[in-house]
Every structure is written in C-alpha cells, then in structure tokens.
Image 1 (tube, rainbow, N blue to C red):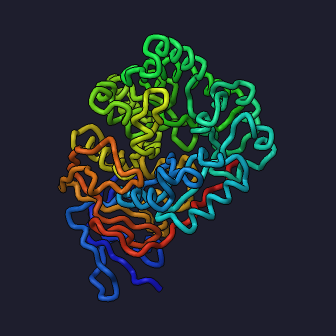
Image 2: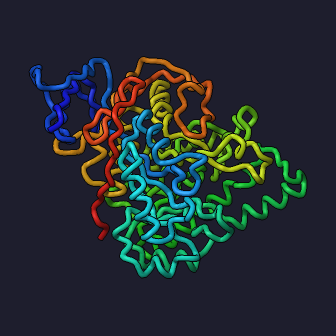
Image 3: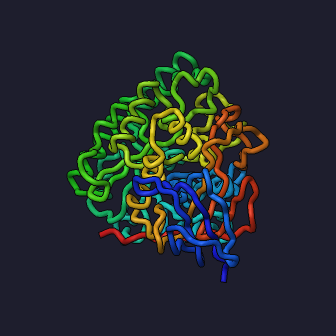
Length: 449
C-alpha cells in the first residue's frame, strides 16, 4: 500500500471556483478534500501560496512513436509533458506505419504501457485508403478517429477535401471525428503562385497566405454542413482564424454540442509578426496567422465558441525545420510549455485561472468522455499539478526536455513554474526532479451512444 500524500493549504482551482483546502491522495485516487489535522503516516507537501490544478489533458499531440523516434518518442515527450503539468495525452495517427488498423493502434497502446510517464490514448487514423474498413468497425470503441497528419503521406488524405469520404464516414461513425480542416485545392493553387515567383525558397512570411484563411474557412464550413446533415459528432482540430470562430456555438452546454473545436497554444501565442524573428521554427499547418486572428481566437476561447486548448505538439529536428520552404517540416514541440503560456495570459489579465482549468482539464475530459479525470473530485484519479504563480524562469537549452532539443520559445521568460506533477497519485515531478518512472494508464472513456 502506498503512503498517503497530503497536499496542505493549496489554492484549489476547480469547476469555476478557487478555494484554499487540503487534498488527501490514497491508493492513486483523491480520497478527501477539506481541512485535515497533521498525520505522521502521511507524506505532506506544503501547498501554501501555490495553486493546484487538475492534471492537464492534452488532446492533440504527435509523440512520433513508432517510426519517427529520431524526433521524439513516448518516453521523452511524455516526460516533457509531466514537467509542464500534463498528465494525460491523446496521440495522433501519423506515425510510421500510419494508424489505419486496430492492430497498429493496439501496438501503440503496448508501447505506451511500457514507456509513457503519463496516461494515454490514441486516435484511429482514417483516410481514403481505409474508409471502407473503418465504416464497418464498431467505432464506439475508439476515443476518436482522425485524419490529422495523414496528408503528409500523400495528397488527398484530408477528409475536408473529400465530400464522398466525409459522407461515408459521417453517416456511420459512432465516435468523435476529429479533422484537420484545410482545403488542399486552395493551398495547391496558392503554392503554384508563390513557387512561380520564388522557386523553392518562398519566404516564410507567405506561409499564412499559402495556407490561407480562405482554405481554412471553406473546409470548416463544409465539414460542419456535413456533420449537421448526418448528425455526426465532429471536432475541428487546431482552429487558426478568427473568421472560423463564428461558425461555432456557445449557446448550449458543451455536453450537448455535436460540433466542437479547439485552439492550440501556438495560435494564441504567436502571430505573423513573429515570422521575421523565428522563421520556419514557427511553421505550422494550419499556419500562424494575423494578430487579429490571435486575438479573435482568444476571445472565442473566453466566450466558449472554442471548447478546449491543445498543443499539437509536433517535434522535428532543427535540420528538418531549417530546410527551404517546401521541404521544411511543419510543426513544433510545445507540450512542456502550454500551461506556462496560458498562465502568462492570466498574468496579463486576459484569462482567469478557473477558465484555464476549464479549457485544459474539465472540458477535455467532458468532450472525450474520459472517466474520472480532469477534475479535482473525491473518488477521481489523483492527476494533479501544483503551480507557483510567482517564480520566473527562462526557456533555454538547459531546461528543454524534448528529444529534438529545441523550442520556438527559447529565450522566453515565464513568470510561473510547475513545481509538482502527480500522475495516478504518484509524485513523478518534484521541483525540477523526476522521481521513479511509473508507467501511466490507458485512458478509459464512456462509450459513445
């Protein structure tokens, strides 16, 4: 039996409230929340002056295993996640091989069971090559199906660009359908224009004009129309434009929404003015766009048109990022720093702590029907993150934990620090030090009806 852990006198941020109380952890779960006398049988952690959040659930990461482990793997990237207060993740299907069968999916679960510091789940990949097999499956067994990242293996793999494939999937799928929403035809036409003018060395500042607002908006609008027609459960990944935010509802509770969306932290943090400074290091698909888009996305997050915050964590080597425009890989590592970014917005008076917990913890659990996680409640798994809101540090090579060894945030000073991270009641991260490796658990979720 594990020694019970008592977190004393912390500011608990949970379900729209902040209260000062103690949290008792026993056998991996939160057993009691309140005020308790000292007990010599407990391991006690002083939370005075600190803020306790539910462990973050990052519902869109690319941890690169199997097949791309020169960039990252489940052990290295989940370890970086823990240092950032993330206790669970959902990984995308564009590993090698692509996760297009239940057998490959189960293989990833086996890897995570041995290597992941955090709790985990995985999307089943879907595209034109396996759509006929997917529609025959009981898709309610999957936390979600997704096409994200599969376009890297060939044109025509984005659902948003294939009405026939969308209709086939949306009419039969019993799980969440999470899609990358850009219209490839528009992007290809824009690529031709800029390639004619600049050749292979298109200046990076044209990236948001190539992967344009129009390409995003048209794809998202059409996907929503299909979802409404077939009463499908649609989730639009990494929203990047202010225009798209107006396609989503905020007049019904999240639990009643059939169509949801998210914003990734880089679309809230960077804008097109940062290309001059950071170049291809901030090349993402969909692209970082304007300052107006950045502000519009934050506003939509605050007023609940956008439901959750993710990272789209996607490590590449520096060599892969620094190639000419058309060869430079899209994506960057972010999972270690997402909570610090959101807390920086709190420091700027732009968002409340309660809203951060809602968008990075509560709503993710609700959206994906994850059991007993995402909240600080008695009887729930003790996935917890303790934060010091008044401790500054600077992102640098000496503290970046990603296997790729770099971050577009290098040189950024944050005013907050994650001090403790608990996964299933285990204190795995303690003031910059990692304790014994204990593998996380497979996320369980309520079956879709």
